Image (cartoon, rainbow, N blue to C red; front, top):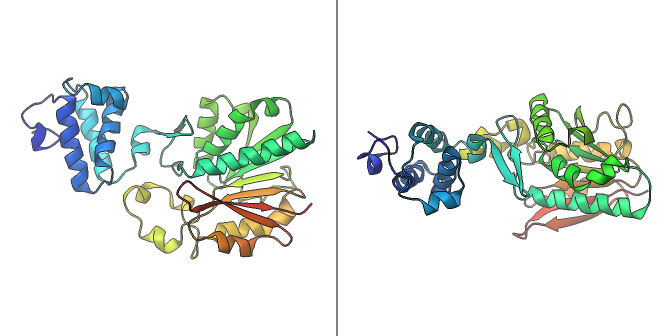
Length: 303
């Protein structure tokens, strides 16, 4: 019996087209909301090709039967494609991913964009050295994007980039991504609980970038599918989803540089809550994502 079900049961070495059809059916039955795409990505992964090859060569014999069957079963249990393939394509980067950290989300690209804008504006404004801090860096995706974008400013000493996380496992993954993109010498890695070492062993940041957990605990408790595989530490934002964001914003006046810019990713309907948590005297704006959902809160501290 073929590992792909009855559709492929007539051949021990099915073609790519047969494997694609049977795998799509298998994943659809398992509840995948993107069964066809999942099957294409897994086939591309095990064959070492891209999706266009898979689609253009349905009659090619699939030689990687066992590898595909194993990947298919992992996906059928709900494991994310990014964990099975070992990477996530994000901002044209290939970010290494595994169970140690949250998978980079498309919406977090907006957070990186806003960080680039804020840092770029400060670099253009004067010649002062700038400290940017990626809090809860996870896989290091945002820090990688910033390090690549501001490579010249980092090399010239105009910018210092810090990436921190409370999880040692996440920091190890981030370090692997920094090495993969050749930016490890330009990023200071630190194990830290939010901004705890700022003003002590680490400099006070001028720009804070944070993608903290913001999913309410009750929703995390009921997670299923891909979310069930990601670390709870990277998802659980407490009863209202704002516990970590609240702690960060409470400490910002004492830990950040005067006039600092704080950029935080937020969940749908959390913009009002963030507004009530902002430090006294701060100005607040919210940037929506492409779906029109409030996604990044920009908090400007007074000088």
